Amino acid sequence: MCSPTRSDMTLLGSRGPRDDEMLTDGALGIVRMLHHKFDDARRALLLARETRTFGPDGPDFLPETASVREDDTWRVAGAGPGLEDRRVEITGPVDRKMTINAMNSGARCWLADFEDATSPTWRNIVDGQVNLHDAVSRVIEHEENGKTYRLAADRELATIVVRPRGLHLDERHVRVNGRPVSAALFDFGVYLHHNAHRLVAQGLGPYFYLPKLESHLEARWWDDVFTCAERWAGLPHGTIRATVLIETLPAAFEMEEILHELRDHAAGLNAGRWDYIFSTIKVLGAERDHVLPDRTDVTMSVPHMRAYTELLVRTCHRRGAHAIGGMAALIPGRDPATNERAFAAVRADKDREAADGFDGSWVAHPGLVATCDDAFSAVLGDHPHQLDRTREDVDVAAGDLLATGKTGGAVTASGLRTNVAVLLGYLSSWLEGRGAVAINGLMEDAATAEISRCQIWQWIRHEVPIDDGGVVTRRLVGDVLERELIPYALEEGIGSAEADARTSVLRDLVVRTALAEDLPPFLTSIAYAEHLVEAAAR
Ligand SMILES: CC(=O)SCCNC(=O)CCNC(=O)[C@H](O)C(C)(C)COP(=O)(O)OP(=O)(O)OC[C@H]1O[C@@H](n2cnc3c(N)ncnc32)[C@H](O)[C@@H]1OP(=O)(O)O
Ligand SMILES: O=CC(=O)O
Ligand SMILES: [Mg+2]
Image 1 (spheres, rainbow, N blue to C red):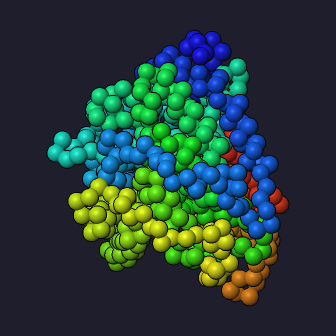
Image 2 (image 1 turned 180 degrees about the vertical axis):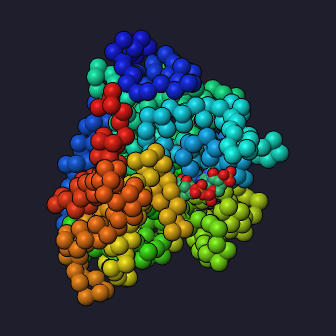
Image 3 (image 1 turned 135 degrees about the vertical axis):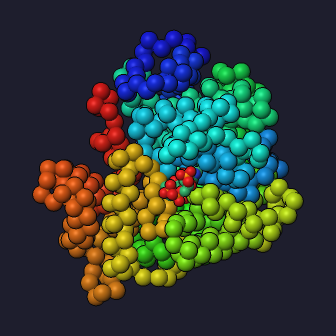
């Protein structure tokens, strides 16, 4: 095991008032140890993602792991204490006010998000750890607009499930021998160090959501990380519990294997629908037969999305794991009529999931907790889950997961304009440090922005005809982009240096990530390196 001294470690980010409490020798010691033990393997896994190829029809179930799928005898560890009933989970960034609001929301769990909902500025990341530590210690407070926020004494608080950043992201403000550490290991290690023992003493545990996995080998990597971190921290094996997001197309073909690799630590799987659509376009996008219509037409009831969620429930329940549903993006706002439609749409989404056998689901806003709770309670009653519904009726073949051609819908001029507008709106907010934002009554985050970007790329690549008689070309998108940039220029003052600077950053990011010949794997990797990293860490 590596020594906890950290003479080879450098911190390059700005200092906040409470950093000394978070960036302690103990916290950095575990990050450094994990870096030495696991970062080469992480980089090898990322390389394997780049070089992985699929057959002409796309991914398939792996022949070499058939025995894992066929073996009926193994089960996962399942829910840890405090995770037995997950009928409603709220998600959100680790911002101080939202931490308190999420904990108090009445949801059973809170997905505390360093990933899709967080813009990973160094300050957001370290302050997020401060907020989590204060929340776990039950001392968190916040003042805003004359209101004091504190944890409710009169109701059960949400169980915290932390989502570290994905394997593809570096944390450039922390270096070991000059090399950035993995953002995932940083988020995981610092949280575990500061909170695991206190959580266990509270009758809970260190719980994690694992985002954007692409193979069971990545699950094996995480399992090794957990086992090593448990030993380092003096926690019994299996104290850590993970819920894996099945949110990439290749992972949908390896759900069983992912659970098997993590079986001593696995609590469940989640149907991360937005990244799943993004990944589907990324993996199949070069094939004309797989062109997807406007985002609004890629609903959860189209055949390939349905196959994915049905298989997820069946796989989970066969192995004793919770199946957690995904995010309906509609959120309440100020207009009562719009709200009524949003509540009805979210209710229908949660009703469908509950009827399909999911054990709980996600909401993006405290105003939707009751809607999700009602939908699941109507099916679960007093039972904490429905693991006994084994869904043996489900029979999903590879072709069902790849049946994008049966999606229906259309590519429209309005869908194209929306994709450009959402991408700009999201990027603009992300660059200012907000990783989730409401646009036109919908929650937008890194995953939904990725869909917009990839759809633009896919439609250009295939010169897809649109409803106004035209065809999507780079030139057409360029025109739409210039029109959609006007509000940003107006905000700064047309012709001003600020307007030029803002629009040129946004334009450049869209051009390089959506209009490029080859689709870059992640928008956030490019934008992070160029725009979020503080000067000292570039
Ligand atoms: C694809 C995926 O990965 S989904 C998961 C990742 N995405 C997310 O987690 C998004 C979560 N949702 C959000 O971040 C927010 O709801 C947003 C940004 C979309 C909208 O936030 P706002 O514009 O602040 O909404 P709104 O003004 O209606 O909020 C009302 C109150 O609810 C709070 N609130 C809203 N959403 C949340 C949330 N998810 N968690 C906790 N509190 C919340 C606000 O802080 C505000 O509190 P206040 O009244 O005390 O000031
Ligand atoms: O993380 C969730 C998703 O839908 O993406
Ligand atoms: Mg996601």
